[in-house]
Image 1 (spheres, rainbow, N blue to C red):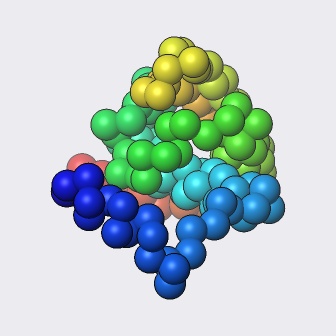
Image 2 (cartoon, one colour; image 1 turned 180 degrees about the vertical axis):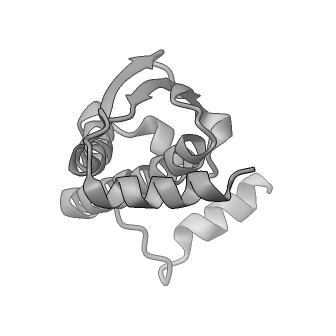
Length: 135
C-alpha cells in the first residue's frame, strides 16, 4: 500500500475506529479463559482414558485461539480452577505446575491420580460378572 493510499484511508470520514472499552476487553479475556478450560478439559479427558496420568499440555497440543497464550495469569488461573473443581467433584487427586509462564508458549505439567477404591457391594457384583466372562 502506498503512502497516498494510507492517507486516503485515514481521511475516510465514514470509517470509525474505536478503542474497545475495558469491559469489552475483560469480557473477551473471560471468553478466552473459558475456551482454555474447554480445551484443557478435552485434552485431559482423552489422556485419562488413555491412562496417561502424568504429562504436560503445551500450545501445540490444543487447537485454540493464539491470544489465549497471552492471557493474564488470573484468567489462566480461572480456567485452571474450573478444571480443579471438575477433578475434585470426581474424587481425583492432582497437581498442576506451569513452566515458562512469562513466555507466550507456556507449558502446564499435570499429575492426576485415581482416588482410592472404596469397596462397594454393587461394584463387586459388576466385577464378578466381568471376571466370569473372561476365559
